[in-house]
Length: 440
Image 1 (cartoon, rainbow, N blue to C red):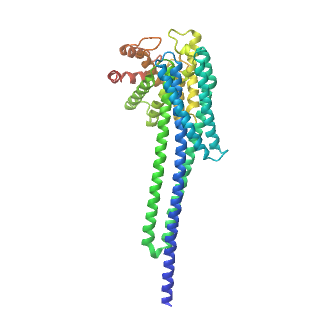
Image 2 (cartoon, rainbow, N blue to C red):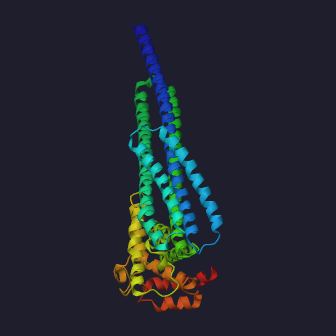
């Protein structure tokens, strides 16, 4: 009887151990297959996203070359024409790759329709710009500006929307993949607990093997997450470069070198860091807020893209009618910010960028534009931007004036404390005087 029980126990232990080991081996095999599928899928997602972001980057470079050719004040038009042709060739080569990727998609799916929309939109964009080039010698500047506003800007907005939707779709797929991997990892851990109970008499074997499987799965999960984080950083970098490219493009229309947006962004960051050091606005000045305001500062004059060249580059004083048109760039800038990054960037960042573009011409005394806001009704980010923007404009040469000396510019900023500017911001700015002189 005892012998029979011992044999039965051995058989049970053997069967339990065999089932447990086979179960773990099978689970490991399933996880390897699943991980391979995830790797393949995520690589495809990253390739698709890199493709559309490369198209977007080339389009902005193409647009910059177009502006350089159309702007009579920019030299080296032959060089710019060569750069334009080179960029167009790169765009068309990228479209070939774009079409190859599209062939692997399910026809009629949402992603395939978005890819096709991008493809058709880019071809239309190149055709529109060919028309624009043919207009430069036969049409007046106003006709060219109207053509850009009616055809090119709406097309670029639609292209950005399609590309942003593809990026959003990629993020959803990536998050879903991460969720699935985490779910499989939890299932594996649960299986380990069950295996521990079933394989009481084979504890050592089952524990060692399970630990090995879990370790491999955790390494795969870490690898997957690191790839996802690296991709998110790359998207952020592309977004920042795109924003700087658009800001430089706007500045080039008004004859600026493009350094204005970089200098004002640097001044804004200096003021923010000085405020944090002095303990000002502690409830607002988080590290995230400082980062968002610094990154959003280059977008403060995006609205100038809707202003006609004749007004934007006028060397003399504006007439009252021209000044009213010029003032519209503030409210237009706030809307353009939402058109470009709304829905894809973090909401707080978009709101800050829109506030800067909309209200950096408001004055502390309520006599600014576009809404006549006064005092703390003006968002803090816009009050700081106002000081940085005016100071850099004063010490820079423009088509309508010579540069002012740093001493005179600091004196003017100080005189306007409590009138044009927030007194607290002016006090912080004046405290940076030595640093600004040192960087001159």
